[in-house]
Image 1 (cartoon, rainbow, N blue to C red):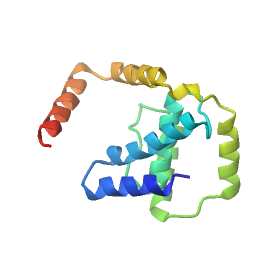
Image 2 (spheres, helix red, strand yellow):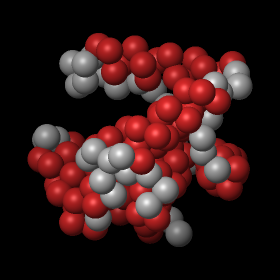
Image 3 (cartoon, rainbow, N blue to C red):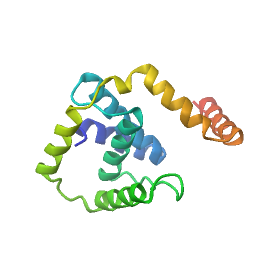
Length: 147
């Protein structure tokens, strides 16, 4: 369950007109902080990111499910279901939440160290084309100038 402050930060980003991925970034950051504090762990940096994105979808961030072929069909369907659940604002099962936390507490916390996150970022960037990285770098530079 995401903290109230995280939801507020995401809503603030939405009001400012920022993208859904930026709003979801608040949840990912919160998840990484939870793991670093030792509240629970994750098997990998990728899992920590996935948990954050899942929480964002359930909190109502309009984050599109991954494109076909990028992840397994099961993962895509899960993401779609979470987005729909976020729109309905249903209460979260206490039993399921407790079971999820209990399982995560058994996982290591070293998976979100600076070096582990750096490794994850580099491997994710390698999968993208040079043109794709160039476009996003230009976009980042453009937004930097606007400030």
